[in-house]
Amino acid sequence: MSDWDERYPALLREHLPELPEGAAVESDTDLAAAGLDSVQLISLVMALEAEYGVTFADEYFSSVTFATAGTLWQAVQELRSEKMESPRSR
Image (cartoon, rainbow, N blue to C red):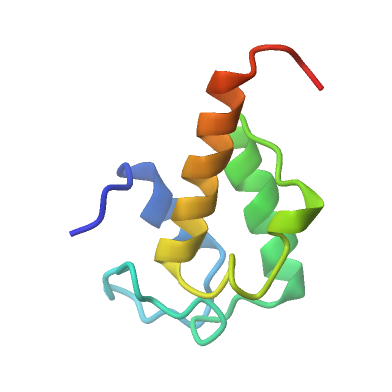
């Protein structure tokens, strides 16, 4: 079981056109195999930024970050932690 909130898998599902209806989003769900392409990726990033109040810096745009639902959630959590540690705007 993952530690993500209930909104996260719903956000992913909206941007993964190849994920079969009713299939669970698991930590090891391969995002590319589920249909995450460059267009979907940008849309997903915008949705995640809006939902979680984070900003994806350039170093997060890698195949490692967007490999699985779990690796992407880890990045979101890191970004949320950084935001909490640094209340000043950049």
